[in-house]
Image (cartoon, rainbow, N blue to C red):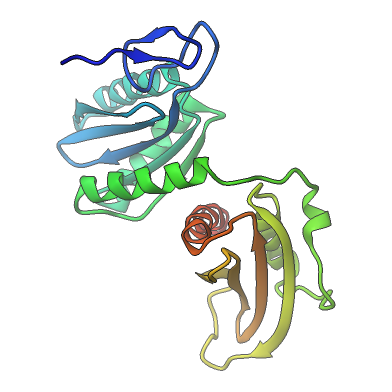
Length: 245
C-alpha cells in the first residue's frame, strides 16, 4: 500500500527527500554522488527515507556539462548542502568535482575514497550521515579550543593550518598538542596530519608529522561513544585531506 509522506509541518511531500516549500525544512540530510564510466548515481539520504537517481554518462565535454547541470539542479532542489563524491577511479571523481563546484557553490563538496561497488559507498554514507545528524555541536572560536602545556606546534604555518582545520569543526571541543619526538622511519612527505583512532568515549588521537618529527595530538570531540567518534574521525579525515590536497 502506498504510504503518504508528510513533512513535520503537516504538508504532503512528493518524495522522502523533498525540500518543504511551506515550512522551509530540509528533509535531505546529505547526498552521495557515484561516477562510473557508464552512469552517474545520486544517492539522497533523507529524514523520511532515501532516494537513488540514475543518469547516463556521456564522454563529450558538452554532454558531460549538461549532465552535471541536471544533477546539480536535482541536488539544489532538495537543498542537499553536504555532498560526498566517489567513483570507479579518482579521474572520474575529479571530473565530477570540477564541474559540480561551478554549479553548486557554496555547497560543501567532499572527495571520498574510490569504491568498486557503489552500494558499499552508499551504505557507509547512509550510516555516517545518520550518526552525524545525532551529534552535538559546539559554537566556539577555533583559537579557544587549543589547550595544553605544549604550546609548540610543529610544521610551521602548515602544521598550524592543519590543527586549525580540526579546531574549526563544530564537533571538536578541545585540541591538546602533545609530546614531540623523532621518528627515523617518517622521513619526507612534507607536513601531514594523520587521524589514527577513536577511544571508547569518542575522543580521537592524531599525529602531526613534519619529516622525521612527529607530534601527538589529542582531539576532544562532542561524541560520547566509539561509534560517534569514528564518524567524526571520518568527517575530519575528509576535511584534512581536502586541505592537504
